[in-house]
Image (cartoon, rainbow, N blue to C red):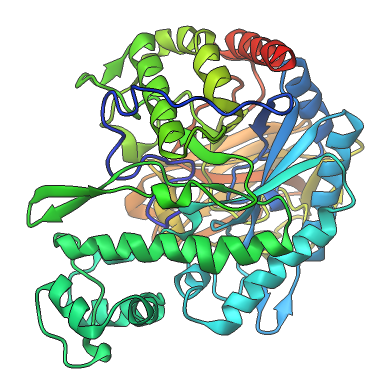
Length: 552
């Protein structure tokens, strides 16, 4: 996921044109029952799931199965599992947690699919944190070899689990060079990015310097003078071409040798090509749709994709038309190969796409109920992006399942677990915990004001707790004798240095610490697990797809 784009966002750039692929290619025949997956993020979000409390996984997986899902989706951030690059250092705790979740799924006869090398995580112990390692993956040999080691290590770890159905890479996690080139305008920055991203090295192998000069419309005397192209120039299609090459030849092909059966979630949107302020063409990434060894063409879908309407609120019939158009187009472009939707979103409430068409809340169930024919015709299943709503919070190790990792403690502080396996931090009188959230992660907090919340309880029956964030004044909440959610709101203008401080007035236990201004909706279950409006229709869809897959 690109740094400036919130988790789960798909459909950057142009959506597929209305009616694209209306002459459908013959859909690929299904060779097995469809994969019906739902992504699981513990009690947190994709960016901090591996530091969250996953003690409730067994109950959640059982609910998934009751709702007709046969597979659990997990994201495996590169940084969380391999925090050290030179030398390589793996996080054995994360691997143990992964083993545990796969084992729980196996005990409930559920499969598992793994999104490998997810680019977002909030572990402060990362060497080249967050997107920094992805920014140089195409040019730094040591970082690249560490990435290959990560792929190999994950496969070695999961190969013994027969219920791991596949692993996949997503184009979103490697879009950073394109995103960077779209945003910068100064020549020195463009020249630097051409080197650090590996773009110039690729360009030298693909074209002569005179040919590059012709495509840029300017003369370059040396390769060192070649920058990344301007986003408003037709030559920017070279940046798309480079990213496709990087994804397929430098990443997917070598990774597939280390992780047999690897799949790819390809970029199926058509990107605009500009000539100044005017769109003068488009770039299709169809070359990534047919990869040796891949069973599926991996795709994604959100209701605004292929939507022919100009209205903000779309109907179920309009979203269904977009679904059919998108799947038909990708199927035609791939020669009729079977598709798999790795990110199936039925709700698009991400702020970045707030101005795009979205399903009216009253239309969601109707859309889901009628999606089976298109899904059955073109796909081998889907993975629902988020089974439960989640608050997008950048707090690392929010439930202290990794001890005090990511936190600074003052005074008597320890960690423990409840009889149900849930984890917590225990603070004595006057003790405090502090975690500083870097500025680039504070931007994830979303709308103004932001909410600081946590689960807390006082063994003695009552305890005051001070919560302070950045430059904001401390706010006091009171914990009772049982676990409950306590929260305060803070204006974004007061976030300051991003230091989150929890101070105990007397003995208290805390867990599930969050800092957020945005909640990703699923329309299946709330953040607390309460059923929402689309549960019945999704269960019905799964039953239809399972029955149709068995009979196909």
